[in-house]
Length: 183
Image (tube, rainbow, N blue to C red; front, side, top):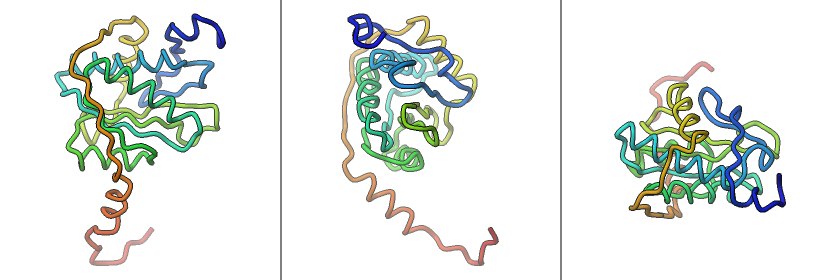
């Protein structure tokens, strides 16, 4: 319950927030900041189990609380031993682009996409260009809800201040089609 000691120190993660291809919760009623730490730690355990290097691009959408949600997620990722590349305020395609531009395996984009304010979520992946599917989401859900994660050394934070400009340049400096497209 918000404004209690337990709310500030225990993870709250509603199980139904883990969907088939991403995660969505009402914030803070269905997930709190400690719950987001747990998701970050859970991602570290999942990457470890799948033999994927713990390197990830993290961005957030325009909602007023998304930067706080991202910070809490990053705290869990860093505590789990991730090298975190923070691209700041971003669109989801920009986060996917950053995986290639920065040569990083993972992505965690904090966004509720088309949902109303009050919602938050994470689009995740660990094998560019793919995002999590039902198998990865199910495994992450099991890890997070069971608390089967632990801290690990080696966390590193890298802020990438120019990813927006790099993304826009890549959109402009692309090969032109030789014929008109019918859309």
